[in-house]
Length: 196
Image 1: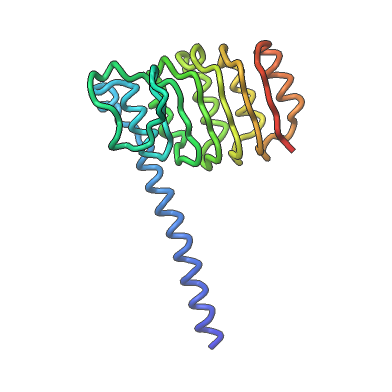
Image 2: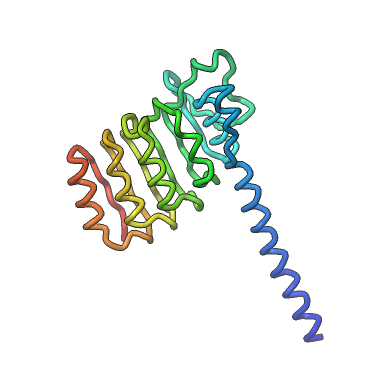
């Protein structure tokens, strides 16, 4: 009986692990960049498709409504719809998909709340994109367990960043030094920290 119990426990344990691997694999597939698609439909439409596929929301310039349904993306002239805001709350976006952001020129607001795949490399990559350095002015990073001081400090490259909210980031070990570095680099920054 004891042997049977151990066999059942091993099978259940293995099943749980394979379930996680499947979702990790599927999320990686959703984040794959199709450069031909970006070229054919434009960076804003391709980025919107990527973000919605991964469970994020987008708001286009000149619209109040957030788009969350992949099949409900607006149609019409491709150059009409420019992404102004990204809400990646609880989405599966990951570093591998960040090349989708390269051509975006109008993004002003970004939210990364409870994003399990967001890590320092993502924030460094985002901060290195020249168009976003000029356009992003509001950002939230909340409950992203893989973000450390290094990733947050990289945000200093976003020259027009005016508002940054950081909360529940256990990877940040030296919040005062990190805050000081950001404030020195971005004197206009309204930095709100809720880090314990």
